[in-house]
Length: 335
Image 1: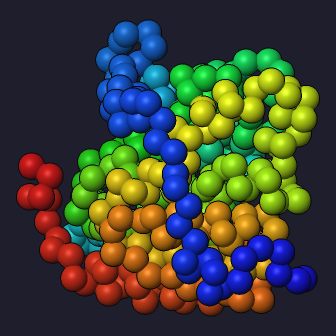
Image 2: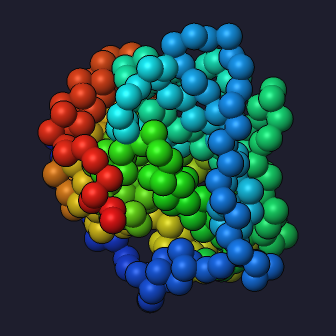
């Protein structure tokens, strides 16, 4: 496939101004401090053992309170035989994906780390049940998909709920006795990479962030130049609602992962694909160039949205091993 966006050299210099909406930090502080909608106590996370037939891992179905106390599901893999708290990789999933079967996705546990996978509300499917519903469907008038659900207001927007769920996942796994709370890395591909970037700006004290071909960055440019979903959902919505352009992009600005990344402090390892038609590289480099913490990027010049796949996993395995080796263990840091 040909290049459809800026060259790598131009992307490295691409640093567009990101509009900061009114009350941006206060909005997120208020959102993350909200109590369950029914006013009751916050439920405790539940980690239920699952028999996968695998002997080298302990696997748990996870249910924890997310946005407004809504139940969010996930899966935790722990290497068998660990004798001290482990570093943990928290993974967020791509658009439309679910956590799959309980014996899948054991790479990080095979490397000796705890691994928590979060279901994205309303998306995906799990053969074991326990998928996460989106109990707030948002306002009417959206096009198919999730990107314009509730876009009429930041308070009703879909990703307000998703980003809060993700923050709650990190908080929950930090309290697990098998996990070292000072060694938490967040990661994901595409939508998952955008969620990881958002979390990097909302959760202090992360050990690292690994966004791969991240979605949800520089929404306006994505909607203007991407010819493939999901960014096209925004363009389709505005094609129908010609008078809502300003409102839509104001709402989206509260959820721009590139803007949230300007609040990040943890080390980051990005990957970006230069022939990506789904998450154009200039949108990904918007996040990378604005990222406020220490950062590295692996650019895959002749790949599309598949990115680096196993090559990037190899980079990540070495990066996390080095990162965790240099981060003090122990639970005193969150006392």
